[in-house]
Length: 259
Image (tube, rainbow, N blue to C red; front, side, top):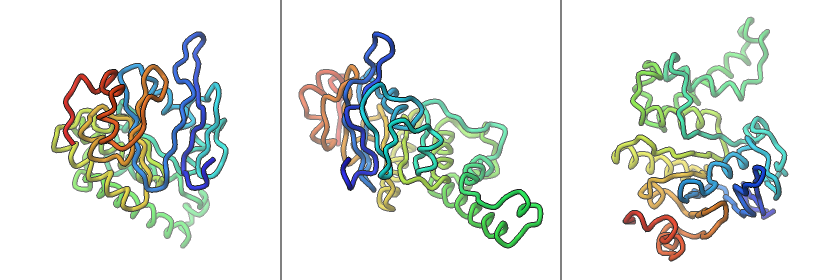
């Protein structure tokens, strides 16, 4: 693998019986880079995302993350190494407050045991303070700190999407995988999402996102990978990709894109 890549997939493929969902795709994400993954419906984006996140083993190819061979790694292992993911369908806990949704995610970093919690040792109290600070920072980044006392079910859909991002950020990932993060957002919310992604990049976090909202892709991504029928057909800067004749033919010809 490339010595500088945080995530790298080489020749990664997935077959379901006679269906070749993803075929020999090469993809990399560098530290602090924002990469977009686009393509028409049925292009294989979600299948590729699932393989990269450890939710689905590839049929062929190799996958490296954080300098380790993760070809057969589970989603739990990928999370341990510093990968966090959001999903197309919101997965917040509707009966918990916004604060508790995010605070729960910080417990992945808890090291003190139950006895320390019962005795409220200095180490336990210090760890709880750090987790509280991390949760508050994640909510502030996502623009939801003022909604921390509201239930997850009380948020409009666009803010539930932002809550999912805050939950992922609370795990302190090296790489954030966003699956259609702008879904359900109005133009103003989508613009704030672009600002958030740019802010994360400036802090050194890498982001890989699947997104149909081309204004988000154009505004947030350093590089874009285009899939069609399970194969990579183009890769480059957003400006390069939207002018690629093959991309326009299979995907972008259905809408006008303005940088």
